[in-house]
Image 1: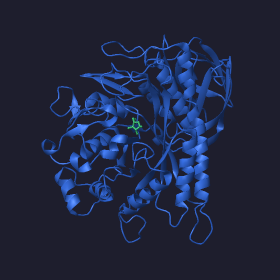
Image 2: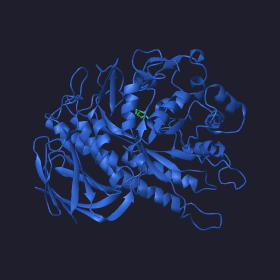
Image 3: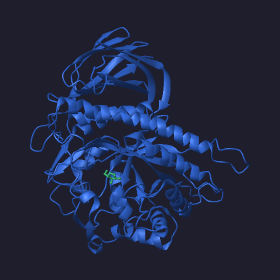
Image 4: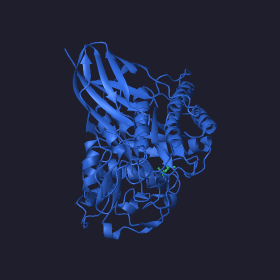
Length: 519
Ligand code: AHR
């Protein structure tokens, strides 16, 4: 029996909807086939954008969409992707072993249309490796300026006279690796240049009306390298203490839950040990967030103000711009980094979103890697078929947490007693409140055992709804040409007795319950 106490009268920090961000890149079939099928396709589409994916993406309120990479951003020239499609250049995409022609049919306007359809804010990542400062600046001018410059006239000619007002701009991607093999110091110097060249659009000037502020996001560390990630953040912020500080609003850490050590573990065929090993791997991110949030705070405190005191009011958001499970490469997959998603991936997706929600005072934005056909996907596509993976359903079920406020929660549950993963417990949980609705999720990581869970609130609430995402077998997944094996089902009504709610939680499952506060 697991007991969970939830305090519903003291509201904690707000859960930024940007924690449910998405990421799409020109990698494998991440965009072509996955999102873009073209206007002439027999696959139903909105001016070339795959209708089934767009509709389903919209339903989870994705808040943020990051594009065009990833590594691809570091060789992407935005000018190749604007203007009449039949006049756009074709080149070869070798990103992460993609090996295919890139005809640039999906460019700035197509991406912005996607954002508009799904209701997400765009995050553009500029090319810091093979591009130039001038090119990046012009991209910002092209998308955001609202006065009649030549670039703005060009944008209007290409179909959009109104500015797009793109707020988030990533300056480089993984600059410690494929993005340039920079040191933190050399990256900081490049960052200063790019950040300083960005147009201000008169933001903050009392005599102008336009005030679209750009939010500039610097490259944070490789979250999977314990020593390097500490050094990178310390060194980067130390560089910023020297002379004057450039504009910086966000710091983008990447963390993958690597599953590459056991060759027998394939994405859909793995042992019980591999089930727990991968689930356990997802928890490291929480410690990385604590560590990096502290390092950012320390780094910012050391930045001197002009009057000689130290900065106390500079805010730089910690962002996890890429996260997800990265399993052994499947050479039979239809495209590179295309991974099936089993219940194991759904469990780690739920636990990762729980980490973000629990630490919503420390992390403000996060993007799953990636939305379609790449790694920890929400969608898999094959010709005209689209599969909603169990990960998709976790995002959908967790949607009510967006913009909610965190609630204090205490949990007493079984330790699983595993020698290799001693910290693992059977049930994990998170609760939030929004308006008069309390949302509680329960993740049962046991591959074999259901569990009786007692929720004990500090007042009597009214049960509203319950949904369960569960699998018969831990290796189950949703496949093409078949009915979905893993799909949210209405939960049995829980037994309510006063402030206490008793729930039977199935093995290998993610459940979400909602209760109404009684005034
Ligand atoms: O998400 C796949 C790749 O992983 C991205 O392009 C890169 O940024 C990361 O290494």
